[in-house]
Amino acid sequence: MEFKVVQKELELQSRGWIPTFHDVTTDIMKIVEESGVKNGTCCIASHHTTCSVMVQECSHDFDTFDLEYLQHDLLDIMRKLIPDFAEEHQYRHPGPVHAQFGRHVGEPGNYTSMNTDGHLRSVFFGRSETMTIKDGKLDGGEFAHVYFIDWDHVRARHRQLNVTVMGTTEDVESRKYNNGEVINTLRKFPEEETAYMEQFDEWKKR
Image (cartoon, rainbow, N blue to C red; front, side, top):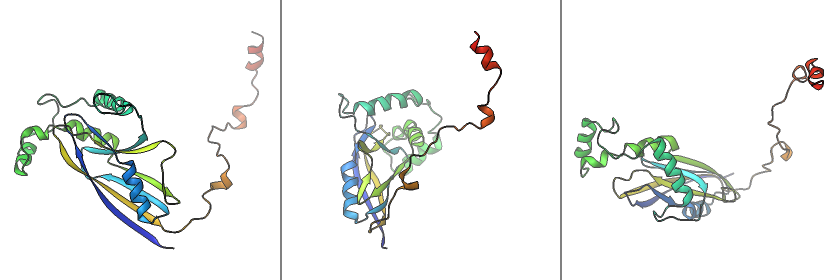
């Protein structure tokens, strides 16, 4: 059985002034198809600490901010949890040492370090998603899309998304666990918790 690993880098451009949601579903599916891997996994990971990867339904409708409705709903919730960085000293980060580091590495101004909201949102969401590949196809169910989210909106930025496809180029045996029987995960009560109690009769008399 041949095991194969394929890595690709997607180059993206975020717009700034508002978080950017990149729908990369078609590109990820194409990478999986061209990889030759029939059964395995696909890891989609951000190269950046202010970005996330999300697998979610496509909302179809767009608003005037060029965001799908579901994306803007998500952004509204994140703004309640982690408000946009709008005023100096709103967050502890960045401190003076970090601001100087930014200038040292060529940042155009201190304002580019005022992206604490992006860092914190990335921590909440995580920077990667791993999906299953079945019979050469990305297994996202009927409605799943893959989004690369750039939470950093202080300026337009070039971004990179890393994709690693791993698996076998051959067919696998039946995937059915326990012959496909439905697993009962409901709570199972022991006999002593379902046994007769005299209070039952008292209740019936009411």
